[in-house]
Image (cartoon, rainbow over the protein chains, first blue to last red):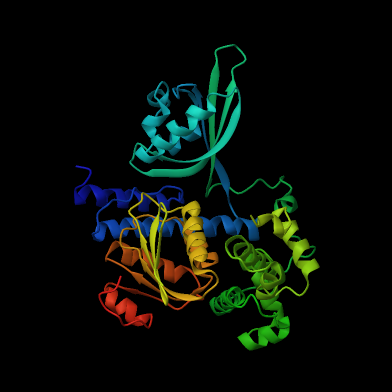
Length: 308
Length: 128
């Protein structure tokens, strides 16, 4: 009975076990119900999402010692969506055997909502010889978990003349073996840094740095105080603040401030009738030249292009 | 002045001193949905900062990208925010949202509309 409480609790237990193993990419299908079990499912899904995000984020700040690997979902289909080939990674993600999945229609693995999206979009794309698109799809695993991901889908012509084929790919981050030592570690880093600054952060330090983060977000229009003043004001020192922030958020305080200001400016330009000049004032930028250049660097277009 | 507006995800009821947003029953709210919801609200407000009453009682699934968007971009021009919830599910959703995102806007959750309105500083009753 898929709707009985025992069944639903069983699902929650399974999901927790997967999380214990370090698999944060599953989720549970939310129900229409409004009871305690449904609220636990919602909680579990959201917690798993938060952990997943923190996990990937860690990879950016500390790429040289964070274990991470990529599990790939990869399926090859004919033009009707009948599965012809799967990678073993896909089978274990979907907890299904290759012989059970080959010959099946891809839509059999999807939720109703995704089936609709798939049939609507693919009709259009199969009319072309080749095309590529990204679709957000939800698959249901054999264990009843939901696997929701943006999937890259390519339609192409087979070389042997057997017609159109569809290739579906997606990546999942998971906890796994650390990168081999032979890999060029420095190249994996997202942020620049000539020297490694390691700071040991206590829970109190981390809380202070989080507060600084929140303070910046909530005061984008104001000038940032000097780092040593800010550090003193928050009860820490400049060194800890500077390198601790970078360690936690993977970017410097200044870059973070600019990034968030630009984000706010973009929303205001898109959705309000404020003049660009007003937006610049409201987001704390000192000059129009600086704003325009930073905006173009980040979004690849001048701010005025966002205006209809 | 009273205006209403509707998109795929929500119904907006706008009075002089309040925006009341009622979320519809949809399978999930993702980033795209969040962007539409915020865009429409901002266009209705035309630059005026206002208190917002957000009726999320029908919401069952909202992903992280959407939550993050609501917390940052989605807080523009919101003076004060009250969620109208129906425990336990939407209670859980609003609690996680409030606990994991730094709030610029003062926000609280209520099960009774009257209390939510009182929190927002509006004490007319029977008005929707």
